[in-house]
Amino acid sequence: MPQEKGKKSFQQQIFKEIRKQIGNNNVLTIPESILRYVGDLPAAVFLSQLIYWCDKGKSPDGYIFKTYHDWRQETLLSEYQIRKASKKFQGMGILLLKLKKANGAPTIYYKLDRIAFIDTFHKFLRMESKK
Image 1: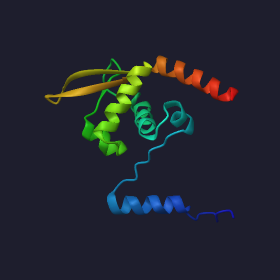
Image 2: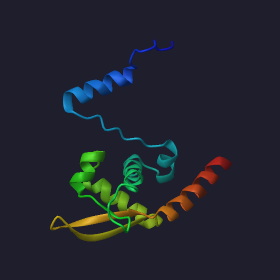
Image 3: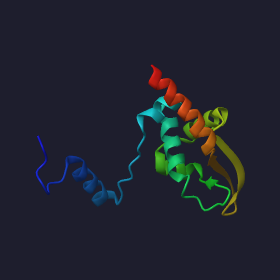
């Protein structure tokens, strides 16, 4: 049944209520192919956020810094899930990490290796399409 013109969808109504109650309605979007590529939901959430932040960092070398608290606020993932996903992505050759100070405290800086990611992701998609 089509929605009447000018009438808000159920999703829009829910998001409006969330904004009204808590001031935001951050949405985590995870393409199904990303989920299949990494093999588990927490890692897919983390990778989707890394992709989101790729163009938003201020560092000229492409690294972004986030504390575990920051990641938890954005993704609802635990420190354990973030560490596990980071280790997985380092093993896949798509994530670079370095430890530097941010605001006076040691902080992990993250960088998605775009070229390695695109290469491995394209290979994965090609294999998926052959199935």
